[in-house]
Amino acid sequence: MTPADYAVFETSSGVKIHRLPIQAFPKFWAYVYVVSAKGQNVLIDTGSGTDVSHEDLLNGLKQAGLQPADLTHILLTHAHIDHYGGLAKLKPLTNAQIGCHELDLQVVAHHDARLALISRRLASFLAESGLAGDEADSLLGIYRFTKALYQSVPVDFTYEAQGMQVGALELIHLPGHCPGHVAMRVDDVVFCGDMVVEGVTPHLAPESINPYGGVDHYLASLARLERWSEGARWFLNGHNDAFTNLAERIEATRQNLIRRMSRALQVLAEPLTIAEVCSAVYGEMSGYNQLLVIEKTGAYVEYLYEYGMVEIVNTDELEQGSPVRYRRLREIPDSEIFPKEQKYVFI
Image 1 (cartoon, rainbow, N blue to C red):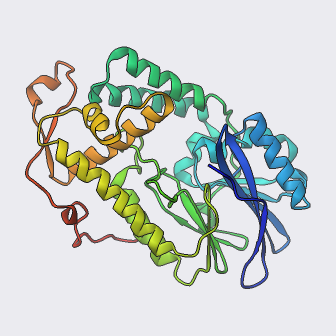
Image 2: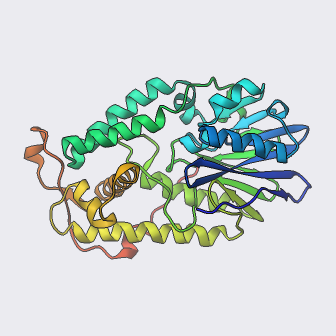
Image 3: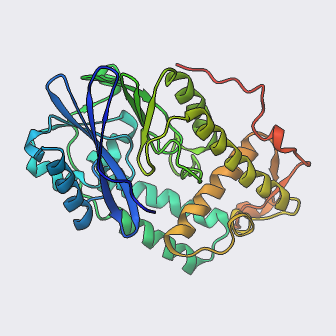
């Protein structure tokens, strides 16, 4: 991934937005933003908290003519480590008020307890998926190691309690990629976090691991984001350059999802575990990438099962701890994977 440079954007009313490129992990870049409006300097996301990421953040603030002490607020688009992990190192340098969505509060402010809980759920999911013991243990170790980079930081306020408005920024809750994922808007510029990432489908995990994740929430959030963003001119996200064509990006994302889920349905002509479906859809993976794709596959199969497109074929074996095996009920055309008649209720 090649990063875009530091840049300054300006909204229709003259609000200045600074884009700071940050190497969150080796060869993996992210962007954080500073919005200066109404006498406030609001930092959106913080990077991962590695030494390199933290140094990039401080250098980016310096390019923007700011020091950490100049920040008034730190807002998180969502509680994934490459977006919130920098809080622990940044907090001692600033008195900025820290905000996140209610559904991400436990991750940010009570990290150890949340890590223990999600690790247990992940272990159960991996066993149900059919991974061998050593392989599952390796993925659990990778998960715990990456999350152990972070230490809990107190949160000063949550977004719903603020009426989804912080200074000049209007917010909207968009669960799916992460339970507490939000987008933010000032004038005609939208910060969409990881809702749409060029060329790939953002990471999804089944709700059995993390409630308010999964395909169904994500699809509803894509539709909601498109409606809410009407009239916006620029879209700034966590990992790609700025873009203007949100509707095209959303449709490309939906097509990527359909392509993966269609492949899953094809191989599910025969009874398979989630691990076997994952290998057929993504090929052989290792390390952290393997963890990501098996969670994605779990989200796909969860959706297909909940919507009655696949069935469990080894019910009698489940009480003995056997992995779950699924099989499609019939051939399903791509046009029916996401039913056109499905209606989303916006609350």
